[in-house]
Amino acid sequence: MPSSSGPAGSGIRRRGRAAVIGGSVAGLLAARIAADRFAEVDVFERDQLPDRPEARRGTPQAEHTHALLDRGKEILEDLFPGFFADMATYGVLPLDTAADARWFHRGAWKMRFPSGFAGYPMSRRLLEWKVRQRVAALPGVRIRDGAAVSGLRTARGHVTGIRVGGEEVATDLVIDASGRGTRLPAWLADLGYPTPPLTRIHVDLGYATRLYRRPAAVRDWAIALCSGGCRAGYIVPIEGGLWSVTLVGYFGDHPPADDPEFLGFARSLPVPDIHAALLEAEPLGPAARYRFAAYRWHRYERLPAFPAGVVAMGDAVCSFNPAFGQGMTTAAVEAEVLGDWLASGAASTAAFQRRVAAIVRDVWLMATSEDFRFPETEGRRPRGWPAMQWLMDRFIAASNDDPLAMTRFLQVMHMHRRPVRALADPRVLGTMLLLGEDRS
Image 1 (tube, one colour):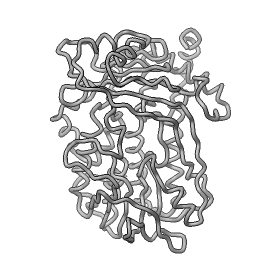
Image 2: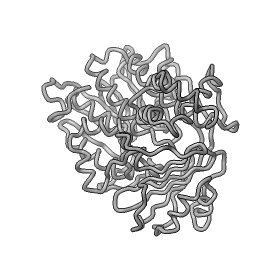
Image 3: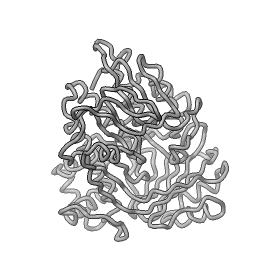
Image 4: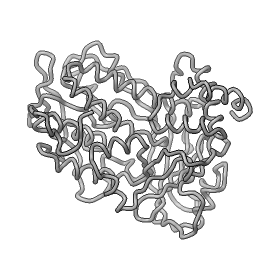
């Protein structure tokens, strides 16, 4: 990827203009990458952007628990040197996913040991605000809020501009990072291009997140997780000495926002740890609620024709079950691919979308392997799914007790290793076959 030591574009002759649609994390990372190659980068965000770490209308999920995975942290630190030293001043610190987490998953406790794989839990509003500050300071970058993009303009198969209200803005590259509300498929249809096939997996998930003041009592864990069933719960420490507590329910069984129902839902989890901890903590107002109906994957890599100079990334391509916390790191990895693609000459939009699809495919496999276990999940299982599910079940069961299997599991979870490569490790396969039958 382009070097981020020094100002964006150091040592590179920057020219032309790029337009980024969407000012959330994916769009801001795309703008940071584009600033290495383009003299001008405009970020168009339809919301009015706050000048402090606050949620905004276009990110209703911002009030809920977020974490940046280990690979995402590495990419952000490369793009913004010193970023996490700055975040540490707000109380955002690395937490080892194995050593610092008490994790009950699929009916068993995960083993605990220093794994070296850290998550960085924080509020979404703080992360987005700090990234936006860094991006806004880059030469040639302009963030335009209250600016809704309404269409594309092309000539001879290449994008030439975008429509923003009644204004037409000339541009050489358009990056759609507008999230689940993307209008790109409709814009393509308006221009006479085919729209991408859409893959949907319906889970009707709802979650409620409530902030608590972290109690003074010392525990042997920093993070508490209960997952793998139709009800789940998470306690994650964030900045300000707070706990972000999220309760999750599938298939219409959504957690309530108010006491005593919120605590009652926590009490219903398979293990009592989260409920017991909440009884000792001070709640700070009611919970925020959010509903996620379905995974959505726009299959741009399958299109036979696509205008040159237009690419899509982040949730504008694929949105996963947010309870798994993969979205921001996936966007960071896609930004890394964007940098490689631009450095190679950005000749083929299709090549970029194929590389994005390869990233999505791995994350999709891990996420859907959890949700396809439930018969209520609606969506087409991929070819060979029973065999893949058998392998994934045993891989996860082996990771409960075996350090190597757990290490491989965390490498996949933190996006350092592909699932297929982790499953192909002969030592892990041996453990899976020995332990999987009894613990799956």
